[in-house]
Length: 82
Image 1 (tube, helix red, strand yellow):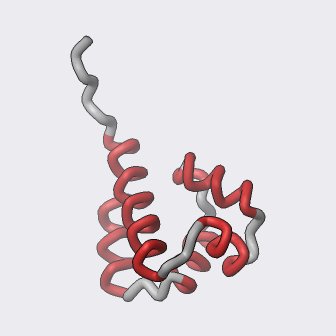
Image 2 (cartoon, rainbow, N blue to C red):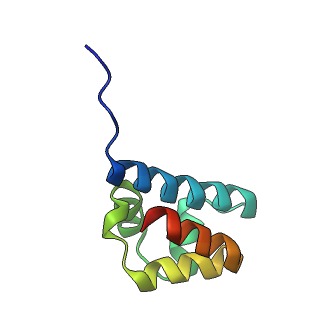
Image 3 (cartoon, helix red, strand yellow):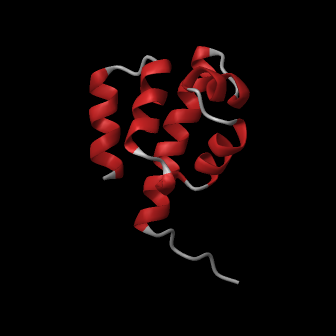
């Protein structure tokens, strides 16, 4: 069966997830650590990571803050996924 083209929405989700997961690894955090640090239940964080379109702005801001993501990287990511 031929491979299907990945939709733009799916590609944007992959970019966001890849950036978050990469930064988490760099900072040495796993999902449980991140959930505790941003004050979110572990199950909710896992759900958001499976369906990144459901992240709320305040949740993303908390993630970026804990991950100490530089402003230029935030802006670049925002341009790519919006």
